Image (tube, rainbow over all chains, first blue to last red; front, side, top):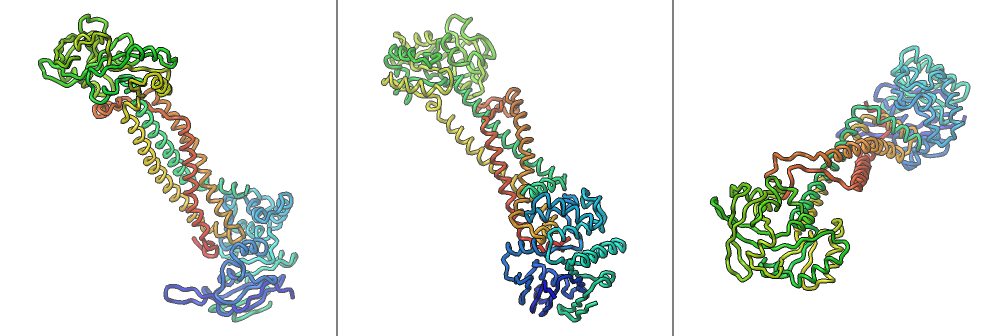
Length: 228
Length: 407
C-alpha cells in the first residue's frame, strides 16, 4: 500500500512542575493512502499529542515522522509552516474558522496562502462548499452558521489545499447527533469516492463505528491496531 | 497581502468598544499634543510681539558705552549720519529717536525707581503701540506742558490719576541731579507688569531741556522693518554703514526672549514624549488584549500554514488602521479648536497677575505653524507602528498546538 505517514519511535515528554509525563512512548506506525483511521483512547492517552506531532504542530523528544519521504521533525519552523500548508489539512474540535470572513472566504483563504489564482480559487471554493452541502450559505459568516455547518466549512477548508491527508482532532465533540451524522457522511464519501486520507482522534462511538481502522492508545503507547 | 489587509480591517471592528477606545485615545493624544503646542507657540509669539510692539521694536541703535552703564551722556555718535543711513535703507518702515534716562519718581505716596523715555510721539506711534494700550487719558495730545504717560502698575503704586502731578529726579548731562514736574496725561497697561511698573514716557524735547541736551542728542534709535524677518537684514546694513554705534536686533537686545523660546521647545519635546509614551502604552495594552483574546484563531492560522511574517503584518496593520482612522479626526479636532482660540483667545485672567509679571497676556491666542500638524501626525503614526510591534511579536511566540486548545 502507498504509505503517506510513517512514525518511528516517537516519544514526547511533558514536564509538569517536577513531574514528567510521558505523553507518547515509543510510538511507531504507518498510515496509508485512503485510510479512514480513528485514534481512540481514554483522556490523557496521548491522542492529541500524536496528532499534533504527525501534523507538525509539535515536535517529539525522540523519533521521527516521515511524510512522503520528508522527515518533518528535521524541518525548520518556516519550512514546516510551508509543508503544513501544502500537505496537511486540519479540522479542529472548535471549528476555528476566521470569524470576520464568510464561509466562502474561509475556504478560499487557504488557497490564497498557497498563491493559487483567483479564477481557480473561486471555482474550487464553490465546488467544495457544494460538496459539504453549504452551496447556498457561502456568504454567511461563522456566527450565522450552526456548529455542524461551521464544521462542514472547516472540512471544505481542510480540503481546499488538496492535502496529502486530513487530521481531525475530536471533530464531532461539539456537534449534535444530526450534525455528527451529516459530517461523517461527508467525510466517508470524500474518503470513498476521492480517496482522501482521514486520521482523527475521537471518543465518539458514532465516529469509531464508521472508521476503517482503529488505533487504540493507552499511556502513550499503541495497544491495539484494528482494521475493520 | 490583500487578504491580510482585509482580515486586519475587519478584525478592528470585531470589538467596536475596544477599537473606539483606542481611536479616542489616539484622537485625544494628537489633540492634546497639538493644542498644547499651539498654546505654547501662541504664548511665545504673544510674548515676543508684546515686547517688540511696546519697547524693543525690531532693532535698536545705541552708543556702545550706553549699553553697559546707561549713562545719559553716552549718546548716539554722529546722529545725523546715522539718521541719513537709516533713511537710505528701503526695508526700514519707521524709526523713533529716544532719550533714555533712569531716575526716581516721587509724589505724596512715595518714591519709586523709574526709566524715563523721551520720545517724539508722532514718530513713536509708527514704531511702538503704547498708544493702543492706553486704558485712561490720552497720548500726548491734551496737556501742553510736560505731559507724561505712565504704566498702570506704577500709577497704582503711586495712586496716581489722570492730571496728577509727579516729580522726577534724574541726572543731567553735566552730572547734576535735577528735578522736574510732569503731569500725567495717560496711563497704559501692557501684558508686562514689570514694564508697566517702571516706565514713564515723556516728550523728547521736554526731557532734552531737563537733561540739558542742546544739539538734538539722543540715546537710542528704535526701528521697525516691513516684517520681523527684515530686522536682521536692516541690522546688517546698518552695521556696514555705521561703525561707531552698535546696532542690535530684538533678540540680541533681549536674549531672554530667545531663551524662553528654547526653553519652550525643550518643554514641548518633553511634553510630546509623555503624550506619545502614554499613547504607546494604551495601544500596546489594547492590541495585546486583542492578541490574547484571539490566541485560538492565531494558532489556527499558523497551524494551517500562514507564515509568521503575515501574522505579524496582520497585527501591525490593525494598529496602523486604527491610527489612520484616528489621525484625521485628531487633526480636524485640533485644527478647529486651534483656529477657534486663535481668534477668540483663551481667557487666563484668573492667573493674570502671575502671567503678566512674566510678560504674558491674560488672553492667550493659539498659534501653530502648519508643518507641526504634519510632524505630529507622522510622529503619531510612527509611535503607533512601533507600539504594534510588541503585540505582533507576542502573537508570533504563540505555539499553534497550545493556542488552538486555549479557551
